[in-house]
Image 1 (cartoon, rainbow, N blue to C red):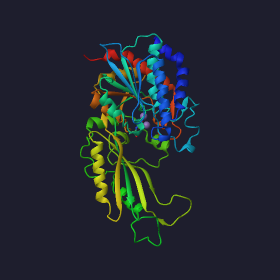
Image 2 (cartoon, rainbow, N blue to C red; image 1 turned 135 degrees about the vertical axis):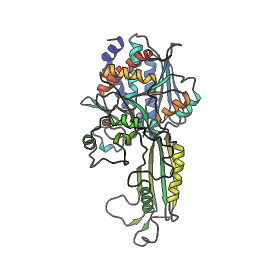
Image 3 (cartoon, rainbow, N blue to C red; image 1 turned 135 degrees about the horizontal axis):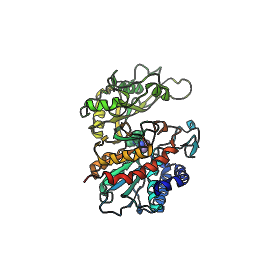
Image 4 (tube, rainbow, N blue to C red; image 1 turned 60 degrees about the vertical axis):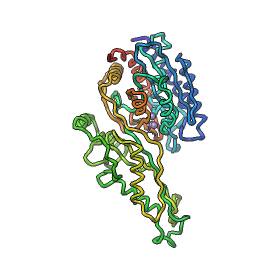
Length: 458
Ligand code: BES
Ligand code: MN
Ligand code: MN
């Protein structure tokens, strides 16, 4: 075993404890009350990157949360890998559904439970520790590395997109390495080569100037809650086909090769239903579950409010109603165009008895990475050496908005080397991350840098 791999084994307990320290910081990017904590997480990482011996470790303030860059780039003739990760996390609510407090990392059965354990503190910290293992074991770093860590991924990376446009030279690289996705299953190393995009909208329906007695006015005044539900019902037909006009115009259809690739992926319907306590599988007619969850677009209500929510019954005709609706996008859909089509559609089905407003939140472009890219082959080799199992290439349904900008602005591919599992419960109560995969992840990352030069194409 190399010095690096030995260093990792010897220091794994320290690495875990350092990760737990990071997990104790409630860096919730969407919550303005947590701004100081997001900064604290950034400072923790700045100290880490300095301590392990990286150069040019810099905290860049933005109008939102800080961006961190660092590098070790001694070679003019070797590839440069830019490591991306995010140190912000989703809110922990509903807090009462957590078995242990979200920001007190707790180890149970080889897994650490905390918000951000998998998404993305645990996974991005893997690469910090892999680079440390080179620099601190006195082993020559095989390639150039750069880091870019942000605190706004969970809110759509609004400041990172302009940052990479303005800092092309600083971020110049041959590829981006990201661990912020999931493995196909336990002990099943996987490389994700596609992510969906996102358009996130909010609808407001306004009726009378105040909540009304539903007996006195019911039947004569349009009810905004009824209108909203009616409009939502018109968004999909009974086969799960989205009715927004023009929605599918740019959708890249699945080729027979793609469909065959999906068919060979294992899928256990009974297990899938059991895990989520589902009565039945659901989705767009004519597609399998893996296709539905990664290669087909969706439309889902993410939040809904109106009227009386308290105990018992209150006879009221609400003055207002609202909904948050997100759409997952696939190549070649454009999130801005979809937002416009959605707005147009909602207005086209809105009755003139109420006032309807549609606003858009953050979004992101879908991506598919070319399977011939040599970086993916190096990543597969590293995975196989550590996990001793053949890698699966998969597409996933989640979104990482910056990945498409890495391609468009910096002209480089991303390698999505995920170490998470679907059971990590990202964004849900009791998020967790396997410490075994944290350990194997660091080893895989270290191995990746070692084998990368063998795959470089002239
Ligand atoms: N790490 C996730 C994305 C992800 C999860 C990709 C699992 C593949 C598998 C990321 O932090 C995330 O949650 N992204 C958001 C997008 C954002 C604009 C809020 C998402 O997908 O909802
Ligand atoms: Mn993430
Ligand atoms: Mn996330």
